[in-house]
Every structure is written in structure tokens, then in C-alpha cells.
Image (cartoon, rainbow, N blue to C red; front, side, top):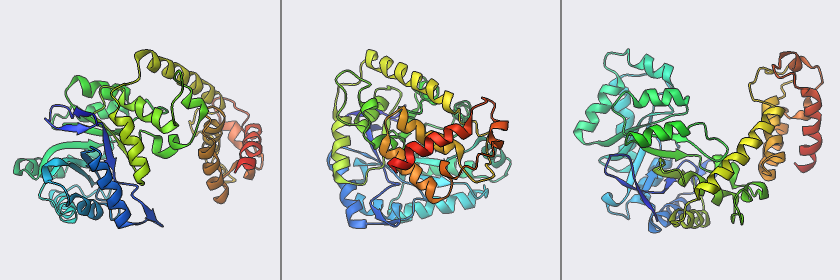
Length: 371
């Protein structure tokens, strides 16, 4: 396993992190014994970073049990505090922190996302509260309950950098993968300023787990799987401290650990080739739909952007299994292309003047047969 600096924290963190949002489950009920076996297999193969969250169901409880087998200082443990209820007081925030510690049977967190999925407007609003959560977070750090403060964010790259400029954060959890490179400048900023970056969604939430000859062929000689190339791509960015994977089988753990243990990153030539090819595919995708959503809402409840996104996954990226799954789900919700009534109200609102009705027919013909 490769280990990297998590910014200037002094932590040496495994290149592959264990994201505990998608533990083995049936109908959203975690299979405890199986989940513990998967987590511990990752630890035994060198993974030393475990990330969970207050809102991941029973995840904190199960992760706490998995940790019992190991010395506390051998595993870097992270969780996240949700602030979605708009109660920004110090006592409310502290209550959730203490419950997370109790669930995991820990006395401290090595890394802690003081806000899970922060948005700038809510963040600024929270600072108006006199005895707010941030004062309590800084107090908890002084007490040693939290060793290093980070944040989890899906906001714009510009707002992510503004959050870093607040000065107290030592890292961030953000999204980055082959198909979503919008946060590259945030990663570069972090790297230049000694800040840690933990990447969520390195395989695009499982999207890049589907076989795709088109993506696997983006490098000379190809790759064993789409997921392998996706993980290698993320880890080739030197600003990435760790790539968190939501692993739910021992096989997945072993495959990802093998990739993260390789000391041969993608070459500069390979990276440029991948980026050029993906940029070209993005241009083609934008011709089909730029995902501006001006066409919505559809009077017949068709999710137009989602249908076009599924079609692009199928046509441009060769992610046929993923496209098939998405279209089937849309059909079950009566939101797929086949429910289009050709009223063309969407075309009146489309700034690209796309012939949406015709393209939806193509989507239905293509994906209905494969679904």
C-alpha cells in the first residue's frame, strides 16, 4: 500500500481509503458480520483510513466494532457532523459529535468533517449565530477530541477555496473522478497550501464500476477494468491524499488495494491522452444536452436531462450496464423517454434549440431495448 501526507497534519494516510457509506446490506439493513469482515480485510491489506458519518445509518456502530481488533493509533478514523437542520448552535453540534464518539466507542477522531456537505449560503448564515458550532469545533480541537478539522463539500470550486481561506481547515472531502474533473483547481490549491484532500466518488458512485471498452482503452494496452483505470487516474493526481472507495465485498477490497499498492502512476503522456479524449467526449455530450435543465419541469414528468445523461453514458462512454440501470429506474418512475407526449414545450425553453422530442425517441429506441 502507498501512503501519502495528508497535507501538513503529519498523518501518513493510505492512498486507498475505506468509505463506509455503502457497507454490505439488504434493504438498507447492514449485514454486520459481513461488513466487519470487509473492513478488516482492508485494514489487513494496509488501508489505514476509515471514513464514516453521523447520517450513514448504523455505519458508525459497525465501524466501531471493526476497529476493536486494532490498536487505536494504527487506523486514522474520520466522521462527519451534519448541519442540514439549520440548528447551528454549539450545544446541538456537540451533541452529535459526542453521539458519534459513543457509537464508535472512541475517545477522539483523528480527522473530523465539522460540516457534512457544507453550502456557502448556509455556512455564512451559521456564523451569525452567537454561540455557533464553529466555536465548539475549535474548542473540541483544543480538548483533543478532534485532532484535525476538515469539511465535506459539494459546492462550487470557488466556494471550496473560500472555505479553505477561512484558515482553520486542514483538509477537505470533495468529489473527483474521470468523468467529473471540475474540482481540479481546488485540489491544486490544497496541494500548494499544504492541505489534505480526500476524494469521494473516485469511481463516480459506482458508475465507473461498469465495464466499458471505450474507457478501458483510453491508455495504450488498456486496463483490466474501468474501475482500475478510474482509481489510477485519481491517484495520479499528486494533490490527492487518499481516494475513498465504498467497498462492500472482500473481492472489491483486494482489487482496489492492488491498484493502490502499485507504484507506477499513469504517465504524463497517458494523462494528457485521457484528458484530451474525455474533453472531446464532453463536447459531443454537450451537443446532445448541456444539462442546463431549462427544459424542466416537463408537463408529462419526463426527466429529460437524466434520460440524455443515460444515453451519453451508453453512447459515448460505453457504460451500458449503468445506462440500462438508470433507464429502467426512470421507467419505473414513469420519467423515461417513452412517456414523452411530444408537446415540445421543452424545446421552446431550450437555449441550445435542441430537437428534444426527436432525441427522446432515439433514447427510448436505444435504451428500452437494452433495459
